[in-house]
Amino acid sequence: MSVGSARVADSTGNWVDTRAPEWSRPYLRISRYDRPIGSWLLLMPCWWSAALAAGMAHDVSRLPLTIVLFLIGAFVMRGAGCAWNDITDRELDARVERTRSRPLPAGQVSVKQALAFLVVQALIGLIVLLQFNRFAVATGIASLVIVAIYPFMKRVTWWPQAFLGLAFSWGALMGFAVTFGRIDITALVLYAGAIAWVIGYDTIYAHQDAEDDALIGVKSTARLFGAHTHQALIMFYGLAVMLIGVALASSDARWPAWLGLAAFALHLAWQIKRLRIDDPALCLRLFKSNKHAGLLLFAGLLADAVLRAG
Image (cartoon, rainbow, N blue to C red; front, side, top):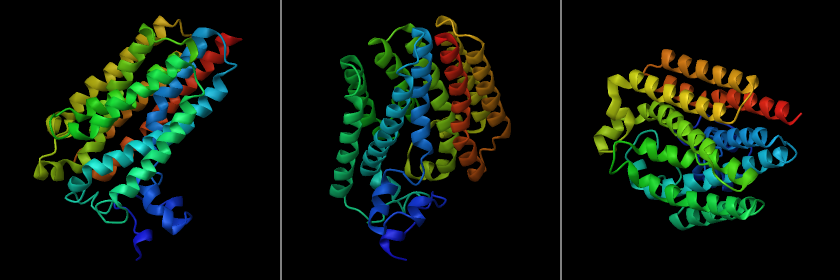
């Protein structure tokens, strides 16, 4: 098998493996375009906040464009973030069974090539960001501090998932920054709820690597919670639902938003019931299912925004 066609161990096969030009595959893999679930999870708080803010403003005229721009921005910035993560983690990835075939530890691309692709994606993200007001631009740029330090957190704290939450939930602030040119208490509560959600689903994800992480000394909430993971998920997922509910109440959301939150909550409860931390394949499936949980909430918020605008 040639270097360009070598499939990453934690990928299941997709358009990158079958349709992308062979020379481009390592670059697309290093930015996880073969596994877009992370981009969708990054996008969900962006869409939540855009819809909730539009509902509060009683104006959905700019919402379609905002949704599209957030979609593009989430995919390219997640791609840039993954490239940065792989650059900083290349030695650790080489020691973990699931990640040792990633492009950098496998020698498919060099660090300089990975950095170049990171910059290209970041520039596309900047172009997207510049379509918004100055406050939104500044808010978006501020997130880069968290993105830059996140890959190092697994080395120094048992709570790297909390730092991922700070980064992946940033979109909960962006919808308000774009719509109102400010961040209010509703945005901050929504942000906090999204952070709790991220801690929950990334703990599930981290159980795939718990044994390898223990061998190489990498910390995670999966290792921290261990056999008590179900109880921890009840706490964090419950906190997510509660805080998002507070955000809805403070924004005077109507029944579609509450219906979306109820569907979101039921999905999270289903995940907890199904979870077996000793089954890596199931952990991955449940982690990926959070895309659907997020879309259920977004559908409710979108319907609420349209109802309020009418």
